[in-house]
Image 1 (tube, rainbow over the protein chains, first blue to last red):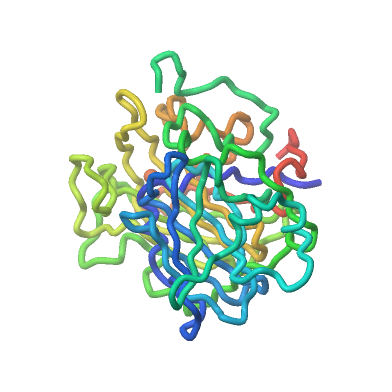
Image 2 (image 1 turned 90 degrees about the vertical axis):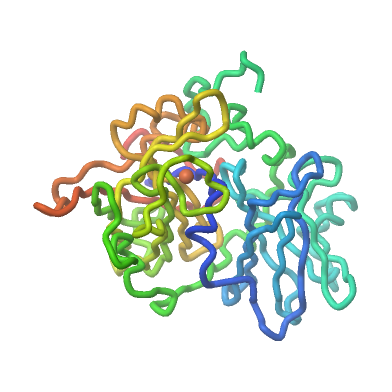
Length: 149
Length: 241
Ligand SMILES: [Fe+2]
């Protein structure tokens, strides 16, 4: 029978000491820039958070700490339609999981289909200039959809 | 937090091995913990592979935090080792284990840490290693000190080492903290007590291990880590261990 899992605890404010080394925020050096802000329930920037992005095959991975404006920045593959994202921060006792759709899906997507239009909106990166923008809101009216792990 | 809000809530076994994400005693959860229920993922997305790291992710002395500088850090030298397992008890091989911690005085080498305790020029406080074929990891370091934090009046974190792990699967990603046995501060710590089930909290405490203690050299602590598979609520918490 199964063993109990080791519980999660927060990364705390000093994660950068341990998690700022390789791999960094470039999933693909020839990729497109994806940036965004990590925001709390008051709309304030979370300036001590970290975002991780993975492609579905687990081949490409990156992570980026947020700056004073809560901003994170990645270079992501152009051939990817969607990336898995994890959010870590002080105050998050467990990381949260979401998905970043780099473009609206071509056909049916069972995951998006199960969401309301407003919820769906939170998972779609929007083109801006030469790159893509994807904000993550932990709480509130426009809170990002987070998934069970 | 209002004065009547207790920092430490009573035990609640119904949480199993899950942490209470909106635990009120840990004040930073208030504006950060998601308030809506998590959306279940379709089956096909539950078993996505995680990234694989090789030896090239490592540098010399990555697993020995006492040998990353010219001199030796001050403090009590310790060896922290254990196995990374999945829920079925199988070893997780090649898992990247990353650790970070305060120095012996309870101070992090980080700009934001304003605790008036000395930095140690011989201690950075970061390490990493890969698990071997039996899922084993091992670090040599110094015992971190307790440190104050602003959560509530006279709040002190028990001594702990932060751990980050990548297993084989996306769902096996884990960031947690390892504590030391017998620490009186554990009883007062809201982050530790956000794990409401006392049996699950025990899983966060290493045990002193005479077997890995090296004579005339370093105390040994053993801490096994179990990575999950399924989603919250899909695993049954057992009495036995
Ligand atoms: Fe800490």
